[in-house]
Length: 248
Image (cartoon, rainbow, N blue to C red; front, top):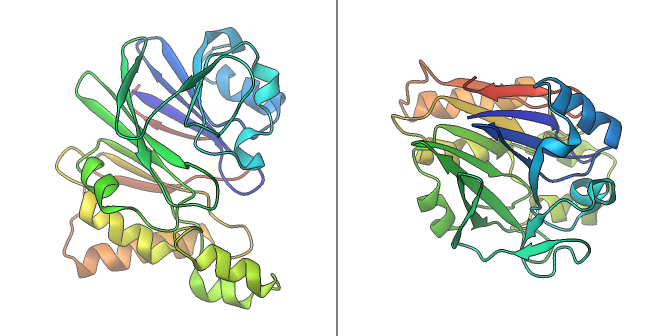
């Protein structure tokens, strides 16, 4: 299983996953040009995408969906209502061309926000961004995955020093907002296991975070928890550059 986080952040999100010829797209908040460039890395084209999975209704995750008609779309009820919609239920497994997929509960200020677990051939990828905390049931479901694409949105001190309106700062910090670096690291410390090969820190704020701060928080908390990271690649996704991962 391999993946390409084409873009990740408040200006647009889209991630490709490929396994044995099946290509999934998670979210489509980017331009058609950027999506085509992401596909070209694997010598793929738009017609090679088997399905689109949507996490929630915010425009940075849905803005470009209209370019993909008539691609099959999978999402929770009320998330999107145009095109070939397949409604998924949290915790209930569904299948797309050899891949097993489960929508997992998140906590965000959009109706029925979810992440996804994608599995095949004893490999598992967890995709979970845009959540103010990780519910206990979700945390139990994502343990010991091979690959994690997990939110690490902000550094608390940097966020509070920004010129953003106070109401926006409090929204981001709330249980329906976004994970800070430390919370993300603590959750991953509770989740990774012997199978884990890679963690991609996603949806980093351009104003209230840096890759260095996100990675430093992980290093500090993993060290405090006496978690050895040898053999686990930990790196950050980018708003304007592709991030490749997984196993070729």
